[in-house]
Image (cartoon, rainbow, N blue to C red; front, side, top):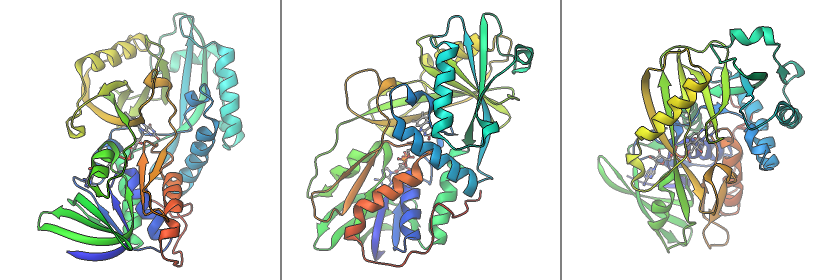
Length: 387
Ligand SMILES: Cc1cc2nc3c(=O)[nH]c(=O)nc-3n(C[C@H](O)[C@H](O)[C@H](O)COP(=O)(O)OP(=O)(O)OC[C@H]3O[C@@H](n4cnc5c(N)ncnc54)[C@H](O)[C@@H]3O)c2cc1C
């Protein structure tokens, strides 16, 4: 198979699907190469939250929170069957690190940065309602705050974005493993493997959205480009028996980290951990110590509930290498380009499910000078996404 495209996208996780949708909506011809399956890696192993990230306020990442809340609102509008608003609860105990006034201040700022209608802001629940919170422990409980954020099915959302890209003309090859790319006068010659054999396509620009494989994809590009040093951080979730009726709970583990307890397909999803990972990203698996840590946290907050583990999964965060605890690292997306002028390659490091649309727009903006002038077909901020 050979072909000529404006853009080739490597990877069909949420970022690859988002980049393909943005480029196809802008009127470009697009080829997406995916080695395993749409949403087969990180984008089916997240916490499935479409949120601003309340805890990022503590590290002053206001732009990230503001943009994520804006994207949450767009997704609530364009994907109502896939993204829905859910009540979130923050219980404050005598032992928890943050005091009620701190939670109140954080939630006030969060409400101001977002634009939900007033009723969906936040409230402190009256003590009389504490007993109806899915068996939440009430001993030493001092306050429970309720606010609203959104939940999704990450794999279904990614597939919907990919289908939207395809309906706008993007082509998807799966399995289609990127093997390498060589700079040409007008872009890149891209080699990839399909079950039918090796193929080559030509493009004016390339998006590297290979998630945890980002630097091995980069290593296959000639001339060679310096890779941004990264750290892969494993996040494990467990799925427990029994539904949650009242929404999501934002709990604090023994080491002070946030652990979400969430309703998920009639069961309870608990996550996540943060463990450094070395090795082949395809081999990431939950570790026993992580499962135990999550179970301990769950039992501490819901001592009377069933804690039978029905399922478990782990995904990898891509974080630029830096000093200090992983939990407190900035979560802004990093974009790197090749040395060409105009840039013809952009690599997307990190990012969030929530912000995929904005991320895709930024990646495309970096490549726009290398792409032909075309007439836009649609606007991703208004295109409906259906399961
Ligand atoms: C534990 C955890 C919890 C998270 N929770 C949330 C959350 O609640 N909310 C939120 O907004 N964000 C969350 N995130 C972040 C979010 O999930 C990720 O940023 C996002 O899913 C990454 O998507 P991606 O497309 O970059 O990577 P991936 O989904 O990993 O996709 C990369 C794709 O590239 C393909 N690929 C790799 N190499 C090749 C090759 N050579 N040829 C062809 N294809 C290739 C892979 O097969 C894969 O499908 C979480 C992340 C983690 C790890």
